[in-house]
Amino acid sequence: MKQFFSTNDIVSLSHIIKTALECKENPFGNEYIGKHKTLGLIFLNPSLRTRMSTQKAARNLGMEVMVLNMGTEGWALETREGVVMDGANAEHIKEAAAVMGSYCDVLGVRSFPKLDSKEEDYSDDLFFKFANYCKKPILSLETATRHPLQSLTDLITIIEQGEYFYDAEKGNYIPKVRKPKVVLSWAPHVKALPQAVPNSFSEWMCRAEAEGLVDFVITHPEGYELDEEFTKGAAITTNQVEALKDADFVYVKNWSSYEDYGKVLSMDSNWMLTLEKLEATNNAKVMHCLPVRRDLVLSSEVLDSDHSIVIEQAGNRVWAAQAVLTEMLTHNK
Ligand code: CP
Image (cartoon, rainbow, N blue to C red; front, side, top):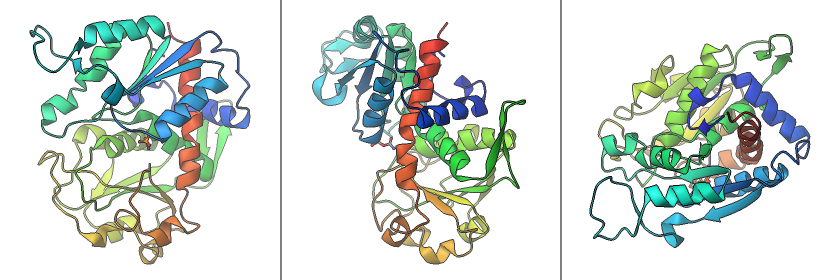
């Protein structure tokens, strides 16, 4: 694997999930495959989970890790081609990425959208320029459009917490009884947040649905439709009550409008998930990528209840990262 940016970079969902769950079972089973290899993690934005879990995963594989908080500690990057660099940006991405590529065997990059221009954000220009100029395998630590390490984690968590068996002959996970109903439910927030997590979750769940693993439903207020590129095959409704009925997993997330790009159109607290709303579900497990604002996005009563699996979910970030790094270290031709 030379790039981990979207579900398109994964040949088999079941294979990568199985690799991740094997890493969880035996974290040091491949502790030498990264010996004398260096992972560089480049953050243009803050992170807790992605930073710590990816470092832990790399070290479990014997890799050295270098972390650069580019947004606060690195030189300001110029990403445009053919401009006279007489402004605030001191270093061109051509040199910066090439130099980092010369120090590292694998690079990870986090770069959030500015939420000013849909076209600019959805080009994921910085990630692809990094990929082009560093000339090393590269993984997304979250870009403007997607958060694939989070989405792989989410799918691993659903397979682990749901009822599936692994058919070794076919190389597939199969639901034991029926496909679980997975609901992505928009939640209110005071700030304009990117669409990366819901885009990515939706993309991965649509593929999981196509492969017979889940039934997927998205619910949000009017005006919060995601880019159709990410939601093909999903059932979409503005009726949250209807969506939650018989749900097995509820994934709670805020995002800003895609259509009215980057705008907060609603802060309706009626969209916050409560224990009362969960009564209509099939004793659903509640997920969130974290960080989460308590009693704004998700009620404390839900977060502190047995419904919540957010800590187990965050724990699985390590195994998702370890599975992806394992692929990059072993199949990177
Ligand atoms: N979920 C997630 O990516 O967390 P961080 O932003 O803390 O890395």
